[in-house]
Amino acid sequence: MGLKVGPGGRILIGMLAGVVLGAVLGERVAAIQPLGDLFIALLVLAAVPLVFFNLLAGLTSLADTRTLGRLAGKTLGYFLTTDLIALSLGLGAVALLRPGDEMQLTEPVADAVSGPVGDAPSVGEVLLDMIPTNVFRAFADGNVVQLVVLALLLGVATMALRDGPRTRLATLFEDAARLFRRLVHMVLWTAPVGIGALVAVTVGRYGADLIGPMARFLAGVWGAQIVIVTGYMLLLRFFTDYRPWPFLRSTGSLWATTAATTSSLASLSVGLELARRLGIPRGVFSFVLPLGAQLNKDGTSVMLTAVLLFTAQAAGVTFSPADFVTILLLGLLLSHGTGGVPAGGFVVALIYVQALNLPIEVAAIVGGIYRLVDMSNTTVNIMGDMVGASLVARSEARRA
Image (cartoon, rainbow, N blue to C red):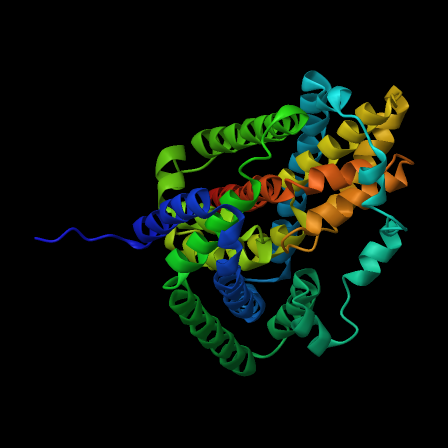
């Protein structure tokens, strides 16, 4: 009787092969980068319409708009609370380890970053950017938050229709969602090769950089994120019907995807499918997960404040207690502006540092290992969304 290897096992084999290949070939392994890029592109291709139709199918399954409002309140409350905790943990970890004290900013590094990197968006700009002025552009750009807003509006409008048209549209949305879930299944057959290639390139390119201050910086970021993951597991244990280890084991392919792609958007299609298999109601996960891909960034929040304080330590700048209030509020705003794509958080980190009048050249140093940071960022981001969906589902079940 032959040994049957499941999807998670095949992905693990691909990752281990990638580690070996990257260690042996070093930077020459970059030649297989297109295989990983192709896998990400295919996932994003499936994710954009899947998010839209899955959310519409979930919304039209809800009883009324009051249920939608209740879901939104619980979801946003969870997102804001966990993001603030994550921002604080990032500050605390770097304040404890102080990796920036050993970092010497040199002129060549300063030359690596020149010119403005952008301005911190205002609350009004963030809100306006959530409204799609061109539906086709929102799909073409893969702007998740705009697609969520469009789906919400169409979902509410569908609820207001008579039973006949509403039923026909609900069936159409469900069939479209099922079609794109099937597309995700097809794409995941290429996951061992695509993820293996991404892991190989990461190991070959960054394996020698985990030394000195960067090792301490990574230890601070990863340590804070481990605390967050521990908190997630406690929430699962005491406030849901799931148990930590079975939950992690059954969602293993998702964490392999988040670490390899470093893209919340690319990982979203996998998360939607696994949430369905976990038994989370469609009306909950189809709302919480897409919204979380844009708004809930616990892993990225840790990174943002860690980079900021690391930069301040390297530049010899200290903050007052009042400054930390500004840091947390601005970090909360900016964390919601990272686009769910690889390295999106790095651009926001530059804006964050610049907005507080710190030298952004230190970001060029962090940029050298950012892929390693982004792997854990994305994993924690998506894990927070999955746990949030589980909590909201449990809360809704208790009302029934």
